[in-house]
Length: 253
Image 1: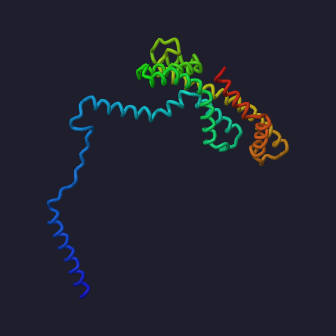
Image 2 (image 1 turned 30 degrees about the vertical axis):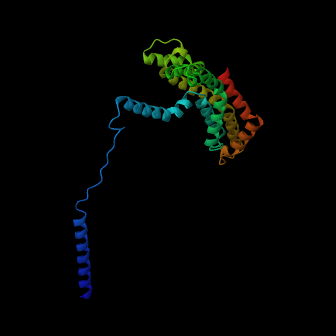
Image 3 (image 1 turned 90 degrees about the horizontal axis):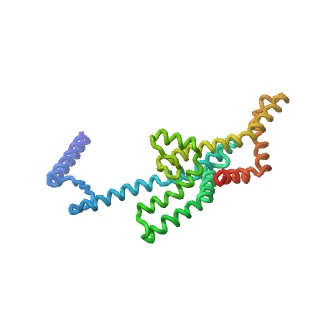
């Protein structure tokens, strides 16, 4: 009985405290949130600059994809992927290693193009000899020439037909036509190189499987035997040097 009275008095005290606190804070209002773009006195020009900044940030966020898809990176990385699958090493070399090697090979291949862009567009723009629009056009010219040299006529004709234009010269084509044609050509070339890479390793797999079957070792997985043979063959043939030389020649030829 005493415990029930104590609990009743405790709840009564809590109720009185909350009631008093509510009366004291009754005049308080919830904090508001006011979001404004610029200042109340900001004119239309300032608002236009804010829009330009937003667009610039959007372009910068897409810049890595643009750089990857307009350089030699795609072809190199896809070929390395074919090599790893042909060897059957699953995750060796790791994807990070292949991506890093592809990146530095891309820098090696694209360095002359970037130097030309720096000479014809960036430095004149910094010296205020060209406007931003003219510098953009001048900077795209070397990149457009590189992509045009690597783009096949069939792929370019496809996008010209789908785009409903009458452009004949790739170097004069708009980027919305040249970039997808270039990417498609890069994938096509990479798959051709991948086929050539697969052939010797496929032959090793077939010979290994035939020998194991003739010896009655049908329960032994052929991949377990052929994998070290393929690795040994690749090392003895100086495969990395041959492959990278072939990749570089495919861009310079």
